[in-house]
Image (tube, rainbow, N blue to C red):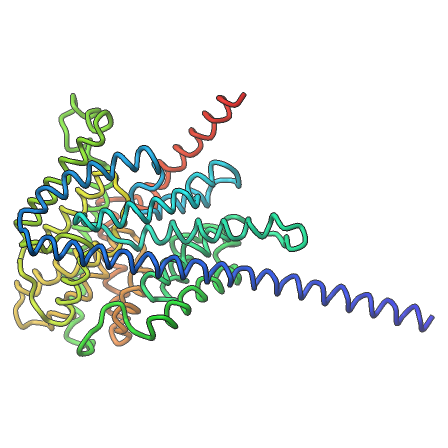
Length: 455
């Protein structure tokens, strides 16, 4: 009897050890995928910065170059997107949200496939080169999701190592990890996963997902150091007398951000006469060229400040330095809408921050000396992003982490929550989730068509 009892105990220990080893291996695979996501995001960031630098050199040397580069570039990028990567157009975050709502299979793969992601990187970089008002953070989310999903499925095909992964968990971990690495903000990546991607509690509180997101962010921190995305020469302090400016920034940016989201969802057809609304669908390349020409004209009106992500202008305003044009904020808003209407790959995250900073500068000019202009720019950045995406907590945390402005966290939260509330009066549906429905329908339609063709 003693021998049998000892044997049962040993057998139980073996089973427990196997379970521990299996769980440890799952964590190791997730962290390995997080490392891949971080490397891809950092490589994408380097490429994007190189393209932005090259655009600055060209536009500064030849003032008229934008009139050629933007229309021809937009037309060429749109043509390549249609032919090579139709699911790579736009931000990338709606595609990820749509993929998480689909069952595992071809439809889901089409939205976050490695091939689409490769073209997403190339075409977004091309857009930055010609001067499109786009960002790389949204594309980094889609690329991260594709990398993580491919990584997990590669391990699943190894019978000895298959430990079972939910596709939606892999997608969420890669997407949020891509954002964390792109902005050098691990905490913001976790909040993004919870607020934007975490529609199901299984994903929302999955420790593996959170570990992978933090892992991607910490790898980026190890490369760049504990440096903020926007470097502030002097800290921005919260003042008791500044609470009234919260209402001003929330109201102005809430209205503009809500209209911004509504216009993006309406699309270019909403701006055409009723009899001509199908023109944009029949001639997408020509539409892209027209949008490129208008972006170039806006850029010239704003003295070249609207080209690219808007990072330099936002950073200048946060440090109390004026930009070259008082029209920067509104011109950047128009250029971002036109770049989105063109149907080229590129995100709205960083441009939204730049738009908010520009609007904050206009508010500060109207209220000279009332409150530190840098604080108004900071609050407006978060407010416009929250209004455009209707994700106030993500907007607060990401701006706080990007600027290391922990002292104004309460002001940021109050501003973003109020701005999001105002925004809903103009755009009831959150932009990313509303846009994801179109991608979901497209993916399902293409999947059904392919099955019909095969049969």
